Amino acid sequence: MLAAEVLKQWQESAVPNEHSPDSKVLSCSIGICQGLANEFDSIDDMIRRADEALYCAKKQGRARYVVA
Image (cartoon, rainbow, N blue to C red; front, side):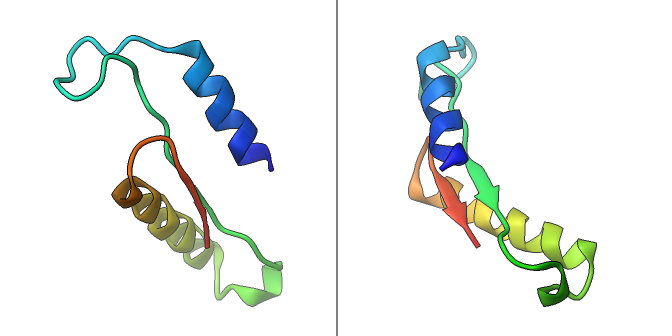
């Protein structure tokens, strides 16, 4: 899956995070909305689902992706 490859590349880049007390490198979480266009009420609905997936990924910990 593309999201797994993005996370792998991101972790390998090890971008410094000098201002965080929790981690010395930046992390990346990804929320993905999957489905056919006719399954959504609107573009806003699709974005809302992706946003919910993003916050679900963040809740699970650093460097994750969730598919809604």
